[in-house]
Amino acid sequence: MSDEAHLGLRLAGLALGAVILQIAVVSQFQIFGVNADITPLVVGAAGLLTGPVAGSIVGFSMGLLIDLLLFQTLGVSALVYTLIGFGAGRLRELRAPQATFTPLGLGAAATAVATIGFSMLEFLLGVDAPISFLLVREILATIILNTLISLPVYAGVRRWLRPALPEDPRRRRRRAYTTGGLSPLSRQ
Amino acid sequence: MYDKTVRRRRAVLGLLVALSLILLTESFGSRTGGGLHSVQRGFLTVLSPIEDGASKALKPVHDLFGWFGNTLNAKSQRDKYRKELQVANGEIIQAQAAARVNAQAAATLGVDQRYNLAGDGPVTATVNVRPADLFNEVVGVGVGTSSGVEPGDAVVDGDGLVGKVATATSNESFITLINDSTSGVSATDNTTSAVGIVGPTDGDPDTLTMGYLGAGDIVKQGDVIVTAGTVQTAGGLAVSHFPPNIPIGHVTSVDTNDPGAGVHLAPMAKLHDINIVQILTRVPTA
Image (cartoon, rainbow over all chains, first blue to last red; front, side):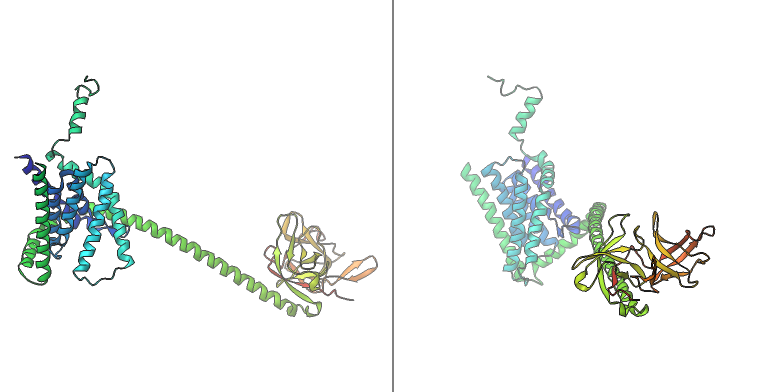
């Protein structure tokens, strides 16, 4: 099996598993009065690890799956999650983020785009709900909660995708050194 | 190569966004029926068993998180109810204290009628200073010479004799209680008319002792001791600061071997729980 097919299968499994996990388990309990939503975090992590094309495809697929399973207006989540996946992938390309806490910022941003974007689209589609303090509070609480769980979610996604990802040059170099290879400093 | 990558990326994004918008438009345009909804229903039919299975399989995880959530919720509720209970307890205590003070006030206000003290110029006062140690049985009240209070005035409450005014300033007076070591009240047995002096009992502030009984005087357990209204002086009987017939206490024990020194009384007034008193400002005349 080619590397791309392997990665595609892993991404498909990730998308399906994350959506079912979200709907069947995570959405069933509340923390701080709101539900955590791992789907934007998974889309963001997938985009950050695989790039904008794969990220946007994963986002579209997960969004469509959510719309289908929750019997929502088709395309709303798909559109928002496509943008999240693409944005996360572009972040990888433009900034080459290596900081440990990048997933935290990405999780907060992805959740903000998801919740605000979803609310805006629903309003545009004519959902008859007032913009209240309650809505703002819920959006903020969801962003904070998702930010808190973004690191473990990112770690889980990376662990799942790692066997299919192209090997990280930094990791390869480090492994060579620790397994007896010459230190870059000693190579004159 | 780079241009190709960029073009591919943009094409994928554009395609997916366009697809989303088409789906959105179609789905929104046919809210109740249409082909897309049939697809959606079919998809749900296929995936809902998987969803149910996952939900059941992951129920222990859900229950675990639910347990944590419920525990945290229960703890926060417990803290909240504990605070509410503290507030309620405080209110109950305040209400009980107010009721107690009211009862004492009502009893004190009726004492002048009960013991016929209206002619003794009773001045009602609230206790605002209490004894700080075991050796000085003195309380302060918020009335003084400006209200006619003078040192030596008798002080009563709803239950009986409390003491006498030791010192008085214009707006404050200090009362020596009848169990203070310096106190002595001319008293008589209300049943047998035995006369003596009621003073403190050494080392026991809750008990009074009646001494200096005359030869042949009899005092029995349960007798009520009241103020005599007179005092024996070198020149004969004189009028006491304490009007007659104010209850002091009832006899709790009599030492049969030495009844003169062993008559113990329980004071009528609750000397450690006085809130409102009446000071008799007019000294009885002979």
